[in-house]
Image (tube, rainbow, N blue to C red; front, side, top):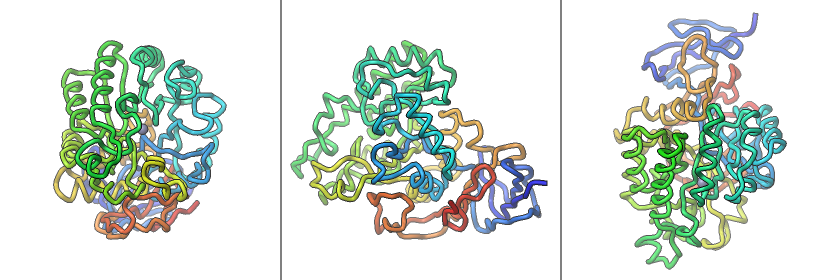
Amino acid sequence: MPETLVIRGGRVVDQTGTRDADVLVESDRIVEVGANLTGDRELDAGGCVVAPGLVDLHVHLREPGMEEAETIETGARAAARGGFTALVAMPNTTPPQDDPAVVAAVLAAGARSCCDVRVAGAITRGRAGTDLAPMGELHALGVRIFTDDGACVDSAGVMRAALDYAASLPGAVIAQHAEDTTLAGAGHMHEGDWSSRLGIPGRPGAAEDTIVARDCILAALTGSRVHFLHLSTAGAIELVRAAKARGLPVTAEAAPHHFTLTDAACASFDPVFKVNPPLRTDADVAAVKAGLADGTIDAIATDHAPHPTEAKERPFEEAPPGMLGLETALALALGELVAPGVMSLRDALARLSWAPAAIAGLADHGGPVAPGSAANLCVFDPTQRWVVDADQLASRARNTPYAGRELCGRIRHTILRGCAVVVDGEARA
Ligand SMILES: [Zn+2]
């Protein structure tokens, strides 16, 4: 008989509803959900929510090529501590994920980590935006999301060719980093009042809006799925809302920093607040929240982007863009969206778990918490207060914009394929 594990005394929340129940796991599956269950081992979930493991569509693991910032192992550990049981690793590594051998190596290392690591393949060779990558070969390795993230596919012709190619690959989706390169140019923050005041060159919101508008048109032309990464502007969100109303096959994600922080933070000239797309205005933050609330934005994705401390200590205009996100995403969603009543806890978990699982085609993630489902779960205390300490994060990097901030809600246990990879907040592997 395989060993059994019971998660005792929690409040189960998934797409089917909310109920107080124990969860019994045997091997890598949930076998029973109900009252007074017993198992060989027990995890206490008293006062906690038991939910399907979170799924992050947008993570930069930095391996290969920038292991001084993060590795597959440390990034996966940060994910597990954040409640994530699956993540999609972005392809902008060195070398990039445009080659089956490179993708296979990341998948192999991911299989030894404490998170289910999937890989997004590049759309174009070298992410250069001109020649298509061997998407069919990458698809055969299990790649379902294709993106040149970090770079926008600027050419409408190349984007159309990628969408046509993806139509022949079951479950494939083309994900766009929507920032017109010629408009975003050499900007280092949002173009607006604050950039003028600070004298920092800006990236206009129109750089995002124009690409989203164009790619909605291309989704209509090709009938292929388009996923918009890290939406940050009111204009782009309104375009996606209209596209969905027309029945176009588009989905979207937003990052926690885009519903939490504004460009005013750049007044500190601290590069920890430098990110692409940039932190925007109060009106954009309100639009991101409204888009998440009404489902225009399907998923919360972290865009976890570790950088070595030296790189983020350069002057604002020389520092690389990006910020950590895996270990703070859930608490920010609880604090910024659920606590103020922007959305229910169940809707927030939809954006963090089952909606992104569906976009990435991850049948073993996103619940429901029911007999027969894969035992990929997170258990969190929604009332636990904690202060973000960059030195205490599992990530190898320290570039969190939330250092010193008090958050509410913390992961207690994370269960991956039936194994407790995080117990009482501490990673086991
Ligand atoms: Zn991006």
